[in-house]
Amino acid sequence: MKVKNRISHKGFLLILGAAMCLGLGFTIGKRAGEITPTTIEAASNLIGLSFNISEKDSMIGNLENQLSNYETLRKVELDNSVAPALVFNPLPKGFIPDLNQNSYDWGLPKSVNLPEKESDIAYLPVHELSVLIKSKKISSERLTKIYLDRIKTYSDTLQCLITLMEDSALDKARAMDQEIAAGKYRGPLHGIPYGIKDLLAVKGTKTTWGAEPYKNQEIDMTATVVNKLNEAGGVLVGKFTLGALAMGDVWYGGKTKNPWNLNQGSSGSSAGSASAVSAGLVPFAIGTETLGSIVSPSTRNGVTGLRPTYGRVSKHGAMALSWSMDKIGPISRSALDDGIVLSIINGSDINDASTIASAFNYDAKKSVKDLKVGYFKPYFEGERASKNDQAVLDLLKNNGVELHPLELKTSIDAGPIVMMLMVEGAAAFDELTRLGWDDQLVAQHKGAWPNSFRAARFIPAVEYVQLSRQRSILIQEMHDLMKGYDVIVTPSFAGPQLRITNLTGHPALCMPNGFNESGSPTSITLLANLFEEDKLVLLGDFIQKNSDWQAKRPPLFNQ
Image (cartoon, rainbow, N blue to C red; front, side, top):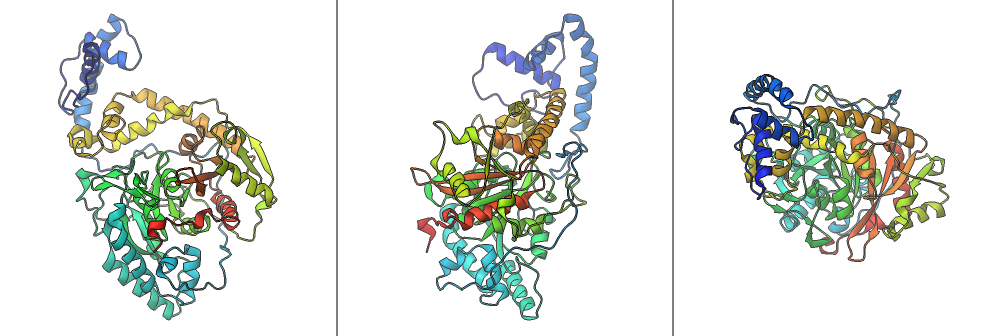
């Protein structure tokens, strides 16, 4: 551990004493020195406790044994893919997911006209491209070439691409065309190009996690999500950028840009996925969210992102940041597209103990008027209220959807619970800190991962367990609040809802709802009960069919 900022002499002694008790020192991994009542006093101050001299003296033997155990522990190399034996479960008391899977009715059009301009083709949603491919109005090979050309034209400007997979994509597209010609059709993703966030492993390619220490890393496997999409006929064209180790939009090669404003970053951490979809480089891409990494870039780039229920989608083959909070979901240009993709990547996986089997039943014939729709009323009022958010409520009211006001109130403050993410992230990247590789990351400010991971070493295991216990209460309280509604409408970043629902594992659909005064896209978020993403897609599709917010294109890339 390297102290880079100026601190007081007392502060220095506090950290030194705590480091000794943890066996860290100022070069993490080396024995820190002798444990004495003085060093115990310094360490206890950092965790807000106090012990008398007798208690401190009695602890020395135990702490020495713990130090010895730390040294033994650190001799074992743990790959990022090894998950803890303690598996997070977001299910509240008595909640049982529906396992009865029905056939899908996506309500796809019988016919779609093929646009003349390739840029117009590139901006078609998946559910229309699917009809064009099935009816043979366009081949998967031609469609794939359109997107490959756009990637090669624009990806450098956006700094959104890490690996282009041109040869394998064209081979897959031609194979999909041959299957269509032979009468075999795999479903709505047959022959559809797509991209993924480069924290998903694909055999034979590098998987960089957006970070300098791993920029040449190859993982000899393919993520479950990618296998499922490939089996459904998807054509993987590229691996897109992410903020280093899933934070922000700064990666080892630069800063991913927002197609609406090239002076602005794409936000993170699914920066490349959202930027690429927004600029028409792919019709959909896979992102991940731990604490806003689908919602935030979807907002910034004016696209539609679906964060599934925790446990619905396998994380096998994905970089772990927080085993109890990571979620994988689609980013596209429509709610319906997100639903189609989710239907493919949904499902339990023997390789991921945190997955939970549940049906995903979408039926386009259902009426949104049968949904009980709530909204967090205080977030639509006051000085911070947005006219764009209000416009969504007005749209629903004007189309006969009854809205029920409610407030988001819990007895638990979700803020401290986020420390669980910091602890898990520090564990996931233990060697990065202990071996000093963190100096290679581009972002080195106080809020960046290197500093956060170092500070997390001083969060006691007891407090981590206490946070987890409070999280159990939060899960039950959110379940009790939300079970009275099918969908809840909320401004995307108002109040603590984004933090709370990421901790409780609830699904969210983030979708465009206009632009702010500076011309940047804005968004609205729909929330639902655990494993009820079908209701999010149903209401989201209804909103998008009665508005044109999602149809807007960044002018610089509309050619």
